[in-house]
Image (tube, rainbow, N blue to C red; front, side, top):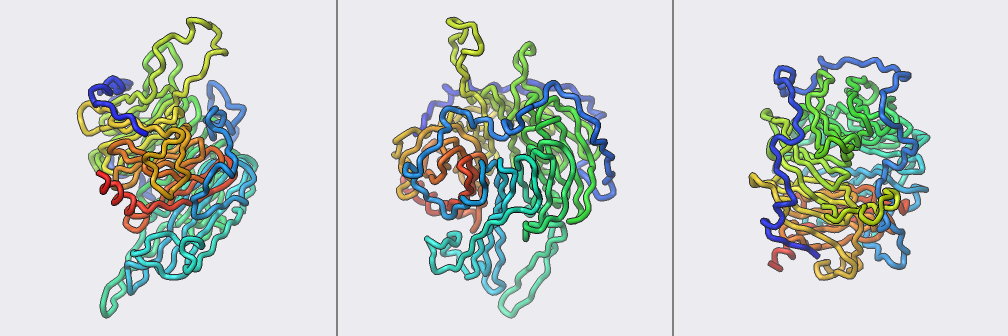
Length: 553
């Protein structure tokens, strides 16, 4: 179900503030060199484990940071008999506790004589959870599939395709929850070797950078496993306690960021090969947990969003903070913590700058920042509190109801002209950034027994509104995928706000979601991690769905 208001009526939800929250920085102090780091720049930082970075408060219960919406009243476990499971694969016997983090990668090997076919198909998933373990889940087919049949191999939908699935616990013995996973494979550099045949010429690529998957935990351990076989531990990095987020550098995948939920530090490692590593920088400045971290798309800057309410821009070479984005409306009140971060992938990249960054906050707002000019371009009001004072009838703050305000997921569309915000209120908002006055295009809500827009055969046909925990856009189409606290993945048409498909099977909160788009982006492989202790894999035939939507217009 969608609420589609006129653009003029939605203008009050957006504050365009070219200079809001801007901290004046001396231009002479800004490193404008486009090259981020070279091997000659690598200097190992000596770290004293006894030196604690001062903070205002320590979080005594670290697990609370992993899932801020576990106690949301909408996040209630469901009975298996109430949920139709439409997933292709279920890894439900590996973890013995809630699964907090999941990341996937598709390894496809092209047949030299037919580039439209896949001689071997391997789909690898690494997950981590509250049972202090990490698992590798592997799906492999050994029979050729063609582009005419783009589906992932399954034993139920395609019984003629031999497929094997397996789960194996990774070797490192964590002593606290496993909270973050990141593959460097999409960023590894490769060399091409031509193979001349009589009828065609094919190229095989051999990676020159180490292919790794990083797994971080609240015990402070960051484990690097071989991506092609994650059962093999390459090395373990020692760094921040309570690792909350991990991110690889987009240029080569040999530099790793790790953010801490305990002391607010951001660590940067150089991993030139599978057995060597150096601590390049320890960025210090945040006064609370680092909730999200990322390199800009051009690799020039490191970014970190924190519970202290600031977005910081760091210079990887110098190790200094080049700018602090602050979003406080009232200096007399504590700033709202930031929860998530997303980068604009298309416009703005290159030598002239790194484009736009979008962050979500606990006060129901999201902020669009322009990194090259260090400006807050717009403030998007995802949630507006009631105008009536909460204290008219009751002055006791402990008895006041908590409003579902926090923005927990943000993301840019593939072309960068739209963005989306998802909150604990269960609402997905689509924003238009193409004009000088960004505005809300669509307000999307999923409600109980609303099957008007649900594609037949994709789920139960009923969706209960739950807080949104993750979102991800299709790379080229205006389709947005959301995960929620009801255990459902919803697919939305951002053009009109319609719910077009729901993927069901989980019985509890979805803590994480990762989507791999294959076959020229015609197929989406959706991987989810849940409080119900399972990892599930769903398939969406995007090409068929898109054709169906266009026929309805």
